[in-house]
Image (cartoon, rainbow over all chains, first blue to last red; front, side):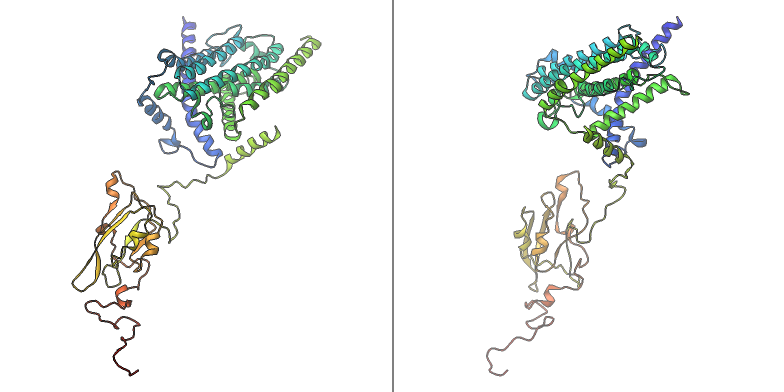
Length: 318
Length: 171
């Protein structure tokens, strides 16, 4: 009985946490970007401008939800839901403390990779169903980009799996008790961060949106809360990738003095801020540069990383 | 690669800089005295309207936002019957001030002219006229101009010689 209650608490905690993080990130991103550009950002509504989140939510919920007459209606409606669902599903396998995850899957890492691949459907279908040129271009770009970057996103994580000897995320965290994987798997970490950026379609890899080229890319035709869903999905995606980096490379909940949950949240927050910093600092590459960088640099690097890690694991016999 | 990292680091360091923002409604930015803001019509030191309704401002205005109608009082002084500036069109270029021969029309450093209704941006003469002489405290056009109006004949203006009698040979 008490176990059921605990599971329920964790489940709703994670759900609530993920959605709150997505909302709070709107404020955090605007404030941080402003700070890095020598501005203040939203500071009018409520203390430190925190009520801006509330104001934005009220605004986006009360906006007209317009479906263009030329759009493919069922797919158009379904597409934004897919991204939320897949990202939330991924949150299920992340351990927030010892033994505290919604689903302690033995193939947790694979599940995460699968779910992040499913996210492509949302963007591509959204672009396709909009039935106009810029969304279509954005959707095509998104599918090509996410499919290419997924390849070595998975490969970069295989080093971690080799070292930990498990796909279970809790076991992976436990295996980092002596040494965080960010040190032996430095290359893997770098590749995962780049691939994670590309998977969440964040600047510098926001070519599917590419405001200056494609209006708003795959969500040009979306308005109201459907557009908001893409946005929330993107922010939850950042949180997810940050949480995965913390879990896989920086020892998840492990840390001295503070309770495990606080450590996990702190580490996640640091990487979220890192993602925002990269948005503030880096320009968007050209599309062919993006593809060339992915296939010609990162994929060989990921393979090399896997090879070397495999060799070391074999040699030391761990 | 190194450049990217250095760029990220530079941007990160900006976290510790003071924001450049002037938080406008709370703190006002410095406005120079010759700032070109809201247009006014000034009066001469005697308290009369300076405007002589010569239409030069209206002609100079590149967006045609000034409209006026000249008329004359009993003493022969020209003045505008109505004087209207449509501030929703005005681009605050200051050409009218440059064109004005009597320093009547002047631009002020006031720029806070927001209205909810566009029609409220059309200023009539009553809205434009101020009680003082503006930027030129001592200037009075009718006193220095050699123009005969009621109460002032030819040669009676400041620094003006009496008119030459062309019918005599005497110096």
